Structure formats: structure tokens, C-alpha cells
Length: 455
Ligand code: NCD
Ligand code: ZN
Image (tube, rainbow, N blue to C red; front, side):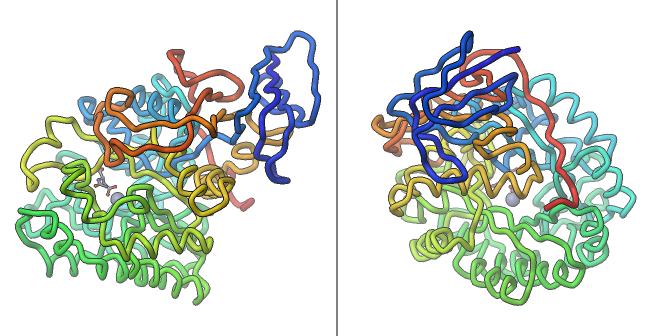
């Protein structure tokens, strides 16, 4: 039996922040109470620190298997652990893309051999996906299904690609609203979320242009593309009784479409990302290519609307869309540089700052832990500091500052969009099921499987 006692901290509990101690036995929280003493336990002094539930990032791209030069499960989860994220949900656009039970199982085995934190795997919905394939992926433990509207699929490379306007027989057309309508009742039957990359293909086609400047990028991915995709997918999901999840919401117009869909009775969750809450187009001159991502970081009024949506509790989840490429790839011309930026290591710190600036620092664990754990179907044993839950704990110093600097980043792409930002917090220690994971150690990460039908 291994016992741990986290003493003297301010603990975020279901009853709010309390000065209590946390007693952990074999990785599971046993007691949360004041003045605990346990003979033989390893004691961690948390005086002056916050004790928070581990983060759950519902949107990361491990690049593993497929692009080890960009990232792998080892570097991804090292970055996650350093940032207080103890569960990552990996997107299915690895190579081969996760479109069947067999691919999901092979990816799970590989991830298990390298993961420093727990992980879950999303399954892919292609335009060619069958209900049997959904059943298979659910049986293999998928946390949900993701459809990349507007992104085609290379049959020979088994890869999700953004390649509009090409007439290549190797490219299977993107999943569209027809695909969603065909499969939504099966997704509903399986009790898993239906996530979309919300950009409408026809609107993107109408606004395609060479990308010579940041303005071109914004003009090529207008917010209407997001709003139309949200509305159309919501109509389909509502009718089928499926839970729709909008990945990386980026615009005021998209938020309005989502709110309309919620009013109409759609079961819908919204996720946005720190980069959409902290940056806007005017930052491009300073941040550079790390800011190139899709959907793009938009205007100041989009940023304000997203912050407001988060404050009002309409947007419940903050994820990162951690999407690393190599520093060399990101240094190519604006048009050639691939879209995406790392972020998992800075999720918790940036959200603590956003929450503090909104006047309630305890909003942060709701955005990055509680609500994401519900989406992942693991809220019965994670994301709560109470007896019976996994001891995934993050000790945060609210009196120290952290300046985001490439040299401290564990991801393969060092320079993220938040480089240089300073936050009023520092992460001191991170525990996964009662063991430190924020410094070198073994691959202890396990695959999480959603509890289906109990949400
Ligand atoms: C992501 C990637 O590189 O995989 N890129 C991005 O700019 N967000 C794809 C995605 O999440 O849409
Ligand atoms: Zn996406």
C-alpha cells in the first residue's frame, strides 16, 4: 500500500475552495479533511499552494503514429504533465487515421508504451464510415467521434488532408452534413459525443485565395463558415438525439449559431482555446507563424464574444487544439507553414489567469477539468477532489509568476502562440494517480474508456 498526504493547501473541492488535507491510498483519494495525520505516508507540504484536479485536454494532436518529427505520445504527455494536464484526448488525424477498431487498438497499444499521463482516443468519421465501424471503435474504447467537415481523406496515405479544389481519385470527399445525418442516430445509440471541426466546405471554397498575409488567412476562413457548420450539424444532431460537440470555437458568429441551437433544444457542448481568448489578429506582427492555425485567431470583437460566452457559462470547456509541427516547418513562408501550434503545457496556467481576471480563479478547474471530464465520460472517477476519485492533483503557487518561454517547453515544437506571455501562477507539482509525473519518470499513462449511458 502506498500512502500520500497532501497537507496545508487550499483545495478545490465540490464544496468550493477549502483548507484541507488530501489523503491518497494507492492512487485513489481516500479522505479530504482538515488536520489529517497518517503514519508512514509520504507527506507533501502544500502550504500556500492551491490543490486542483488534474486538467483534461479534450483536443490534442499527438502526431503519433505518423509524424514523430512533430511530436509523439512521449513528448506530448511530458508537456501535458509539466502543465498540470493529466488526461489528454487525442484527435484521430494521426496516420493511419483512426477510422476503425483495429487502428484504434494499435494506436492505444503504442500510446500506452509512451504515455506519461492518461489518454483517450477519438475515432474519425469519414464520408465512407459505416455504422459497423462506429460500433467497432466504440467497442475499442473511443471517447467519441470527430468529423472534419471540409477535409478530405487520402485513401492511399490514410490521412485527413485539407486539399480543396483537387480532383484526385485518391481523395475521398470530406464528411458532410449528409454523412452526419446518415450516422448521427448510431452515434446517439452508442452514447458518445459527435465532435465536429466546424467549417462549412462550400463557404471555404467561395473564399479561397492565396495566403500571402494574415488578412488573407482571415478572409479565406470567414466566421460564416463556422456558423453555418454549427447550425447545420446542430439540426442533424438534434433530430437524431446525438450530443454535438463543437471543437475549437473561434468566432462571435459561431457562438451565436451555437446559442440558437441550444435554445432550440440541441444537446451541445462548446470548446474554445486559450489562443482565441488571449490573442487577436493584431498580435500577428509580434507572434508570427505560431499564430497560423485553423480556424484562425480572429478579431478583437470575436475574442470579446468568446470571453463573454465563457463568463456566461455557455462555453464550458477550454481545450488547446495542441497541434505541433516542427520549428523548421513553421518557419517556412506564411503560405507554406502548416497550421497549428502547441498549447497543452500552457492550458492550466492561461486559464487560471483568465479566471482570475474574470474575478473567480476557481472557474479554471471547471473549464479545464470538470466539464472536459464530463465530455470524456470519466467524471465518475476523475476531475473531482473527493474520496473515491483518482488522485490526479496539480499544486499551483498563486504568488509566483511564469513567463512562457520556448526553452521550458517539452513539446517538439518549442514556440507556441502564447510565447512571452506572463501568468500570475506557477505549477509546482503534478500527480497522476498519486505519483509525481511532472519530471522524468516511467510511462504510467493508461487509456481511459468513457462510461457510456450514465451521463
Ligand atoms: C490541426 C492539425 O494540425 O492537426 N491544425 C490546426 O490548425 N488546428 C487540425 C485541426 O485541429 O483542425
Ligand atoms: Zn480542428
